[in-house]
Length: 77
Image 1: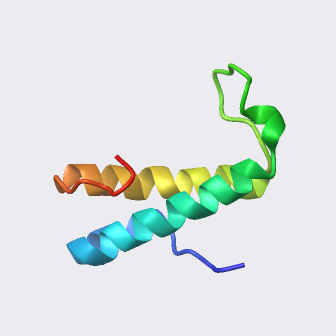
Image 2: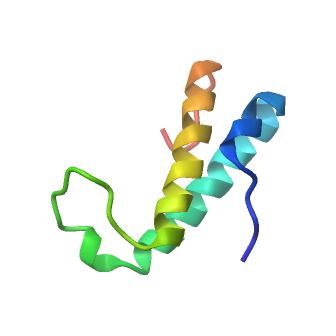
Image 3: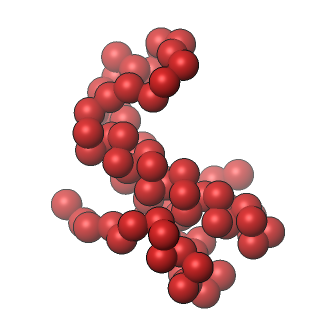
């Protein structure tokens, strides 16, 4: 499994690198989410799932926020 850096280092990245990281972290989150299909059709207030899934979501959400703060459009949006 590929290691991702903490989202706190997003401010050190160029715009292109930040977009690449966001796409990579989104793919990792989606891959892990697909392994837990019982979560897809549920309505919940708190994100639940395995520790790797929650960590992937946290990394992706921080990076996605940094993309939006810079005014960049993610390929996902």
